[in-house]
Length: 305
Image (cartoon, rainbow, N blue to C red; front, side, top):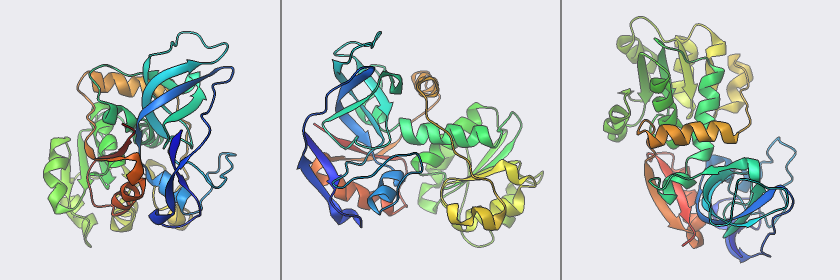
């Protein structure tokens, strides 16, 4: 099979399209012919030499990618309820930038026919990440919530889930050219610049109950200044500041049941996935470069066709 792999640690230029042996589904596993794979900052961190703290060994050449959508083409022993030809989306920690991926049968859910391959390939990682973060900070009806970096894929999912779970007001930081997009998601946009905390206070005179940071910088500093209970602040970006700011580390494992819940929200028109751009597998390097500009809205995916 063809796959985009990192041959050394470093910038996007270390990505190469290479040939690997076709993986085979073992007991309890399925093989999926990948149609689309989402691109995440997690993948870029692995490319730069970071090793996930999940007991995973990164070996060069390493295929990155931790979310995908495609068609089941091989079913291992002991797997029930899944058949060859099923259209699915799912998750792994590595190996998804490839024509085939083998994963546990408990790591996939059915793809609705109305969901595009790009949308399906880009839902799993950031969708579940936003879900985990908002559950950790206890979003509840009536809350006023600050989402820092609301135009990116992770932030956009967080805005929509906060509204879905009853937040009264969601304020999202973004550059000016993304403000209309933030409004379309149901949030009040505000720019990142210095003095952010005071601008947010004017928008939320009764205070901010919780905050989720996906961008660091002024937005995270403002969150710490605005939210009284630090247990209701979470960052998925500025990990180096967690101890200094007195915040807690939030982690969680993805699950098929949570993914199915997100798919259901999408099917009902209550969760939208904006695809910023899609790249062929051969341009994985360009996809990483585009993601690392950190200025675009929505999701970047790789297409295998």
